[in-house]
Image 1 (tube, rainbow, N blue to C red):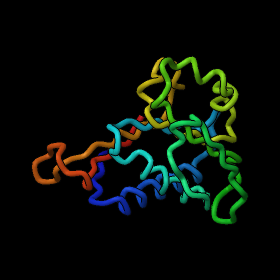
Image 2: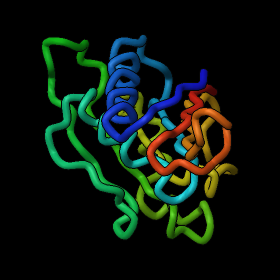
Image 3: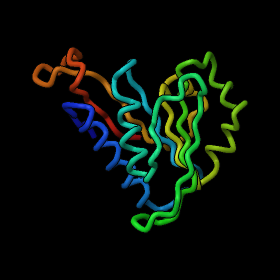
Image 4: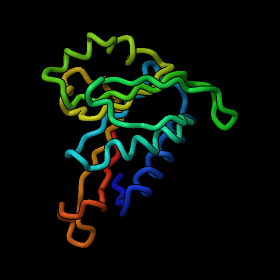
Length: 160
């Protein structure tokens, strides 16, 4: 599925709606993993700000570029079933090899079905990415020409 957003607010709204769909889906064997790809500034964090809001997170979402991982607790919300307890936001931009994630408990995080995990720069850890991860690719485009020139208009491709 490809969606064009014309500004940051629309990108956040898309993320928010995507999170609501995830919260209402049937629980799976491991964590729900959302793998984000795209150029620097292409809207990955903007999408996740809306995504976190859709999960009910009130804190400000910034990319954990220097700390690599941030964890947020998901509280029981009457609007959604209580399937998930944690949201992990991981940024792989500074990693030199995928195995560095093992030091922060990668396996424990992705195998826990109570977790939702969003990974920015997921292309850097392809070889350890779990099967079934939901992919969100973000890129700048010029809406009329389909070229990558507009810093506000983005094409987001969502799929497996």
